[in-house]
Length: 470
Ligand SMILES: Cc1ncc(COP(=O)(O)O)c(C=O)c1O
Image 1 (tube, rainbow, N blue to C red):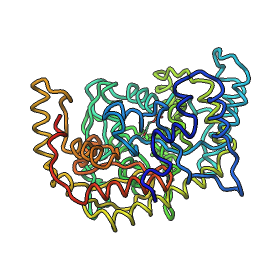
Image 2: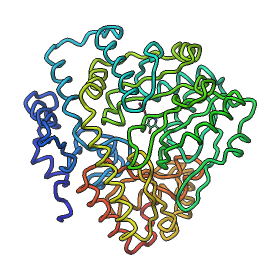
Image 3: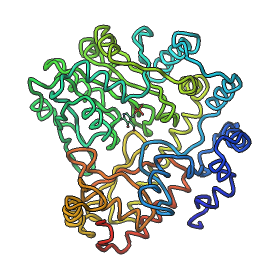
Image 4: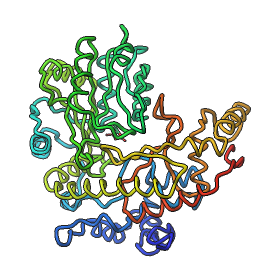
């Protein structure tokens, strides 16, 4: 396969008319062409996840931000931030297009027919897909899982108090803690043969008098753990006993690999345990709607809901709400096929890495569209520790790239420089993240092949590269 087939930034822009779209933002014709293409109906009932959908030139964090950071033509494949490269489900584009016909964007009545219908869809979706009964009155809309979590942390945790985390965990949580002036209480997970598990005694030992909440990530970003009912019960019992409120972030719940099952915390068989929790969800991961800013939380505990609601000033956008509505009203089959495609991608990555990239180790995750890679051999070979120490020293002395550089930052820079592939550096995911990188595989198989073959080539011979120090 030609290396750049369908993926070359410039040819993509030329071929799709996206250059005109970018250059003349606001010009109606290319925008209409782009959206019409996005709304293409599946043929033979099959949605197309195979054709690379080039996102360069759309101000995407995954691609364009990396170009901004690393320079022109530096990145060929973005495999960082957790969003998907696919065209959205046609039902989403259809509902958005219909609303666009009405050219007025005044304030939205959240209690109106759209809000009500969304509420019904959330309840029905949870019932149908996960067998979970959600009280419609307890569902509170918010502009993202982050704002919801922040509202909850503010409700339960005074500044300076601790928030429990199993690490490695989603790095965005640390930002929520900074925002609420709380501190992480990190409980590193056990790692045996590439598989992570929770040491429950250790978990309990980390709970002190100033630990008020635990952020559960299920499935776990970045390790891909799907927590079993037994795991969740154990965590739930400890948290209930020690008066720690469980904030269950289940945003990745739809991505369960074949043979795996997602267990909602709110479905646990002990009512007291469930009542000690709040669940945070969205359609954004499942349907590629991250920038649409729409999420929700719910709990059977009315007092909890009211306390969090009091901190949750959420003015949703009309388009964001419509996009999530379109996802749930007509996107289920698209999602089913997407999850299956992702499962195939995960298999493909495990097999490809085992066969062709001896410097990287990975095991197939149970859930999410993320791959957690052990890159310790790469870090070793390039002298990442020494380079990071030198970069930090230089930064203290007024160097160009700023302090806080980790050895994994060096691996990140190395892979961009030598493979043109961008991955997220593991140390940002907390204790236990060192020597790892996170790779987002929610893309076309072809894009994945290009990324993996570029990594394989770049890692055939590995040597320190002092230009990375900055
Ligand atoms: C576990 C987890 N929670 C929350 C978020 C962000 O949610 P939102 O964009 O709704 O604020 C992400 C995004 O990657 C995530 O992985």
